[in-house]
Image 1 (cartoon, rainbow, N blue to C red):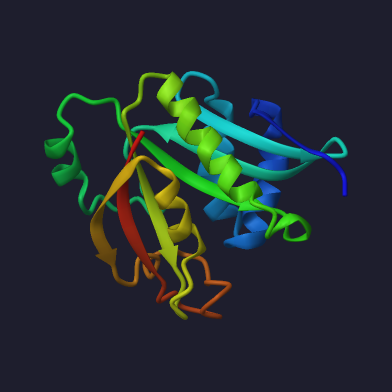
Image 2 (spheres, rainbow, N blue to C red):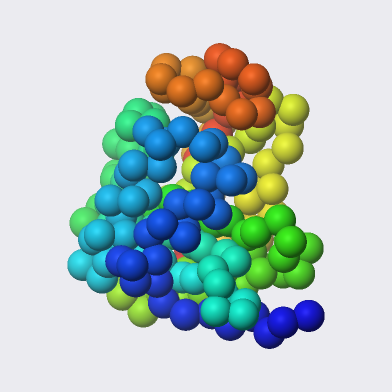
Length: 185
């Protein structure tokens, strides 16, 4: 097995990160457009961590300054801003690992390193939406326990139903949910 290394993401990592994230979530270019834009905002308003093996990106985690769901909705934002007044809140957008490298704790390491990168920026809390597939599977749910603490704001049903792309998991109109959490850093 090749050694896996981790480093801070750079704008030129955009295509590799989009490819990784697109292969595990949704392949629609519309879905990946905000992620591509995030990489252009590093280091001012974007943050990324890249896992590499053999010089190739095999994992990525991305976050952006501010509260932002991937579907543009605003559920729970007012409550979060009231709970954390005046804080510079960040949103962890995505975490992905190449299928050949899953089960090796790379996603956990990416998540932990992202939390540390945000903490190093002075961030004390970060929001994360946990995609709950229509079959109930929510792999990112296991990651929140790596944070010192977290608060669940609730589950949003049919989270992506208004989006203009078909869901790769639902095979058509999406009925996946999202659990919204705020992580303590």
